[in-house]
Image (cartoon, rainbow, N blue to C red; front, side, top):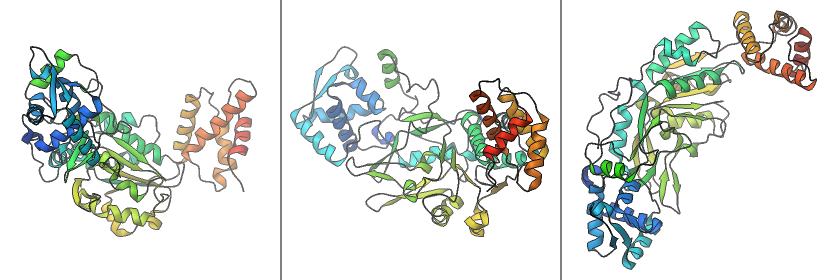
Length: 450
């Protein structure tokens, strides 16, 4: 149950700490569920798990016991379940079994949908909570941002361009020649959002047009340590939580802001609902799982679909901050498109996108080949990280032989060349020691001169 309303499409949260949590429902109506829907979910739960305590049913369905109690009473009156035992605590401690009639109805329900798990939240509640914890509400100032970029050497003007892009919560286009840190910068933005952007709530699943769409994904969503639903509780603590009012709705999971990275494997099908025809429920697409966080498309322009197809799919969501998803029945419903989306490419943007699309991307950050002073800092930082000795002659050789002769330096060259030096020393069973001769040998192996 969510009471606060979105204002002008912007989050009400100021970015400091945790947005207001959804509160546990007091009734089926507040839970956004019908009695028939919950009945089917309870029957499938008992069919899959066998005999269960009322306490465990409430815990597995992530609903207060008083919400499922109406369903249990109805199913008992309909002779679909029976009480096998209990104690003085009350119905919450009763053990429920399916009757033969209940097993038959459970099997019929399984044919329609096999989903067994936490009860879904209503689509409207998901939409509202997503806007309340939108990326546009994140606070960002230079000091905490510098902390996540401390391992990189970047120019001040570039750093000053990245900060406002994060604060805006809009879209970012990072472009430039390969090997100069585009992916590293994009990942550092993700680290900032993940570690300093606060925490958010996402539902295990939501209900749209009477269809279940699973959303929480352990592969991409990181639970916050100490989340009450992540650790097992003793029965006494669980009973108190399931019987009290005003607690957090257990159908929602508290997570760090998600950072989802995709590259050349991305195709248009990954941006649609994934329907399991055998199970008859859906899984949310990647960009919806990224709501409240970062969606990074690395190597943009090298996907399985053309850039034009991808951009046509997203041109309205980027503008309007919402998307439409289609069910197998053909029905469409609206969902938030509320994330910081980053396009990273080493191709010429003019060959990928037109002006209409570029207008919808608020921030463009060009990353060029580093000047010599920046390259030297990158090189020396890598020397220190690998435990080598400083060797200015090695840098002088690279400029004399390659960079002053037409080959643009790359920020990644320092790492690649020095790791080859390290491998040479290890192969020869000699201490890792940087010399001009070793960098010459490393460059002959690494830099192509076809």
